[in-house]
Length: 611
Image (cartoon, rainbow, N blue to C red; front, side, top):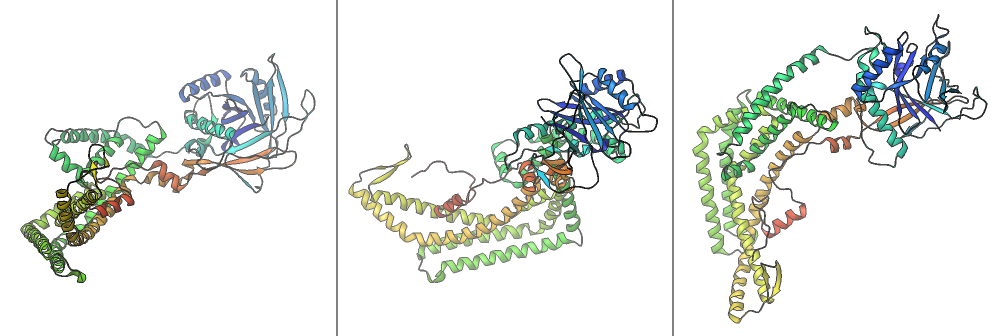
């Protein structure tokens, strides 16, 4: 058996006293958490450990003794050894340093069935000078020379001991994640979470150190200086009333949004299609999560709150920068003066495009009657749109001025509003696309239905399949006539559909870029990524071991370092789920919709095929 002792580096120079920690159940391992300094009263030590055991939920106990040589304390080692009768344990670790040396010795006292202590002596001398190569990863293979010593009760080969040194502060603050790749050692995988959990749950033990006035003085990671900030404490005190006020305002807002008037079907339909309304509801849910009075106990809940808060803070900061840029040097007025001429230019280009389609585009011979009807129909819509733009031109600057203020709610809100404004300004292009797509779709489905008529088949609506059917002569004659008409009209309808589909795709791509930007700001885990970049030990994927000392006659001394989580795993694990205004289709489904003339991102999904 190998006895593994996890020893904190901060206790290497601690004064003589008792080792406080925990024996890991099912493993021949011990985790040292702190050193209680001499002098102390054993009854007060027992009472303090019992109190800490109740607060932390960890089975804390006295593992043994630690002896640091000092003048006037020559008999300290034997005194600490005798304390094993006051703190009865199955195994008693007795660590001591040698005078003038960096290394220390270890004796393990075990109890026989009669309760008598039997000493198994293990000379463990640590040489702290220099590091020897090699990095052991993943849960780690540890190699060392077996320590052969002779005990008091006889000679023979004894069990070897491995000291694993760890940085207590990093282990306590880190969160161990499961390893996705590789095949780790099951025994090590079951042991490491217990070690990390023991150090993390023992946080109440670290509130008292050797500088406090009290009967018990200890050495642990906080003995070198406590982390604290007056500004942080003031912010914690001020966050409570701010969260209560924000929660009250959000309650009023949600009650207003859930009113009967706003839940009517037309209002609910319009709000579900506007990116601004979707983003507003999304941020409302985020603020409710952040300002919730419930304390985040689980790690995932805490990281979700932190990521949402940092994302909201960055979003509002970018929005304020955008507002300061827009309202400087009268950029709003310049934009308003540019908007109407730009709309006129787009309308002029569309008129020239329609005139080109009404002629002989690219030398193609079109059906002149249908070509003229469609061209004049679309030209009439363009004239209506230009009249509407010129009617609204006196109010454009005022509208843009108030729209610009919406960026104070965040950059994502401004981008969502820009997407909705783009949809309104290009509504005529959307109408052209819908008209052309519906006409083309009717032509394609009509031709496919008539083609089945020639083959003596029909579409069974009830069974959703193609069945055989017998047609008489009149039905075949009318079907042939309609098939011929639709076939010769197909090039004209297909050309108009192709042109306006390309225009629609340009608008959709621009709106898609805006939606991707909004989703990126909403979902990207900024807080988790900041931890990964600046405090990588907080998100641990595993551990790696460095050999500190490996000499003949001495045990193996390892340094346990934290292996940080990969950047891709951080994004995948802590990414916040988002909503989208449009359904997400695959490229194959999108190409199929374009070929059949179905609407891109339709308001209504087609579920059944109708002939």
